[in-house]
Image 1 (cartoon, rainbow, N blue to C red):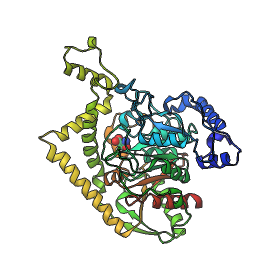
Image 2 (cartoon, rainbow, N blue to C red):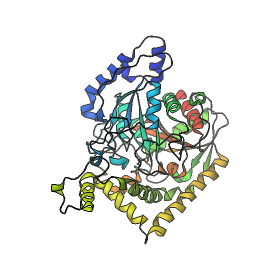
Image 3 (tube, rainbow, N blue to C red):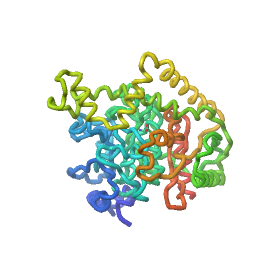
Image 4 (cartoon, protein in one colour):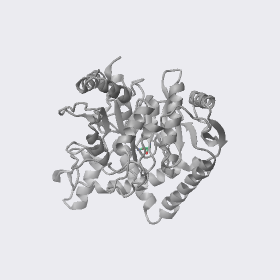
Length: 469
Ligand code: GLN
């Protein structure tokens, strides 16, 4: 077995036993990159190596891939958009500062859908990432580069961001673990905003233990993010217990519906049976407003995106159209030409949708209505969590689809987010855990959701499942 195939906790054990050196771990990851990056293309940019820290018993020198929308000081951070080409981050995101303190080794900026708009990592200005399990298929998105890097052993662990499923769905498609923490649990300072009321940074790892370890590093209150929650920050590894006795888990009847792939359903139900045999109690619940989640999400998220993307105008960041390319030489023409050149089709589509639903004539009918529906979706979860400790669903309705399959059909791309968007709209934590393979050897993901700030419940259930499979 290659070193790059190990989990972070296995590597840390071997560091402690003096069986492994940091330079060997980094060497193995870089070797894997040189072998498979031409096929997988998980990275927008691989960093050239700095001086490596030595293991000192306290630090955590693990090679990590960072999604290209998280600022690392003095590196090009582009959201995989032409409009941010040559933008050098002037500061570190809070999570990056925490990782630096822990001794992390940054392998590179991982590929992603432009501005995190998408479910396939095909809209990156650097070209698509491919699924390590089947190169003809997408890795999911928008954190497809992060998930493919971990699945392909091109990083030991990774950070992604999740606005409507962008950590969990690629984790499911690539057979790795992805956690979207509770809104406010992990600082968004230095994450280039897509939809500020939905975005969360989270870990993509090979197993549940690594997810808890990485959460220990990145989570916690941050005064630099006004939406950060000032709540106690637990040691997540304490939740890694092999015991779900007495836990009540809900199965929402609206999530096991027509359109759900039969193999996905079977594997998720197998996991339910296994957890039942470990002592969890299951009951059917109802989340009646989740059927509006996609419509609601694509109103709220595009509205916030159109507002957040207003700042990219050629003046402060990245690309600026040259005077020779601008018809007249007034300022508005320069803005327009820059935005026309800099944004790809999906970004333009979202800016137009969002601007429309925020415009004065349509605000009440779309955006305000969207906010009301969002509250109803959240109230369904509040009600459910009076009866159950956690909720289990599939992460995505199918396994990884083929490259190009949905590129000309935005609606069918959007429908892929059917099971993941409700957790973002409600602010609750949700994790995707591998639960087996389809007949054609494609990974399937199981989603577990819990109450706000109950990440420990997710780890407990996930760990019990993982250890008993
Ligand atoms: N696929 C969803 C979208 O396209 C989610 C993206 C995300 O979570 N960043 O908006």
